[in-house]
Amino acid sequence: MQYCELCEVLSRFSSHFAVITRRGKLLAFMNLVFFTCVFAAATASEFLLFPLPYLIESPHIFAGSFPVLLLSIFLFNLAVSAFAVVTLPGFAFFPLSTFFLLYRASFWGLLLSQQPTWNLLVAMPTLVFEGEGYALACLAGTVVGVSWIRPRWICAELGISRAGALVKALKECVVIYFSVVVFLFVAAVIEAATLTMIPM
Image 1 (cartoon, rainbow, N blue to C red):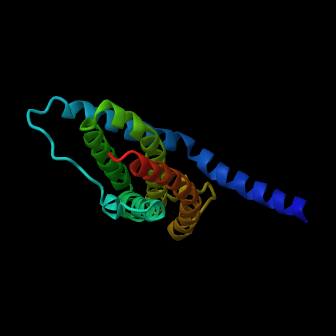
Image 2: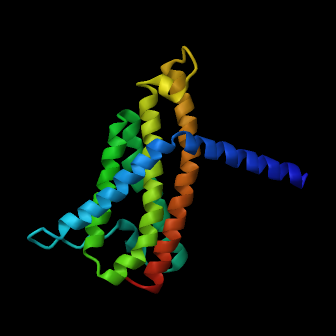
Image 3: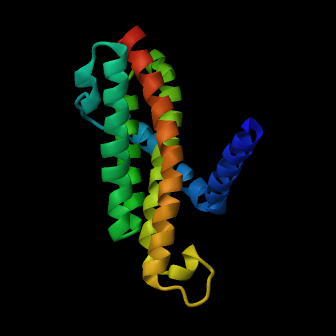
């Protein structure tokens, strides 16, 4: 019985991995866009003639106990920053997911540019995991947005309708969001631990 359960878990993992790898080139592009924009925004801010106001993210207002801070950061990043800001606009018009991914990257770049070197190094693990979560969220929004414009890109099945392609894309979006949840949760754990032990 345990062997069968293990096989089922492995089967689900492999099918999940297959969905991600099928869009591997697009995901690589999203990562390139995000991290390049972070670097570009951080570099550009160094040449501005006036200091930028200190930027602070909403979850930090819940600073206190570690579990509360962790939960507030995770839920904010998942529900607002990833889904509402990055994924959802792409459902209506797929380039908007990439546009808002660039917005998030610019925010990160401006935020990091104001930090001393030590804080910058401490924030890097959070940036890597959170950035990957946003790239996957962008991928999910793009896939759904393209589905009703170009159904054959979603499924090679001949004669597939836009409605059928949209249903398949939404299922794919749910699978992708499993990875989004994992990456953003890990990022939230790192960020909450960092803010608890080393206040920024």
